[in-house]
Image (spheres, rainbow, N blue to C red):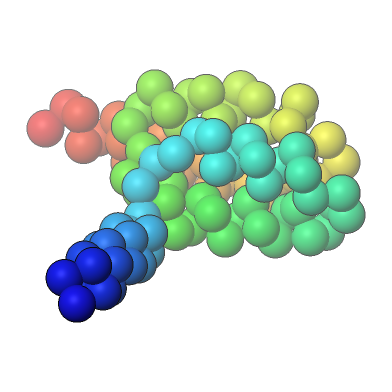
Length: 97
């Protein structure tokens, strides 16, 4: 019975922490490099940026922005560039305060 409660608690903790947004550049790269269709790739990257981008610091956003052409290929467009630029400006303002 103790093992069952431990397994249930581990599942609950994993479930709650998995939903918390955080800046994991590995996830970003994984989405970009494993999604073949450019339209799907663009939508998934925009979703990731909107969900996790605000948790990234200025250095991480710079890494994302500088790697967009390489990682996204034909999915790299103005919409994604604007989103990352806005994140960069907001992160820069946060770090100044």
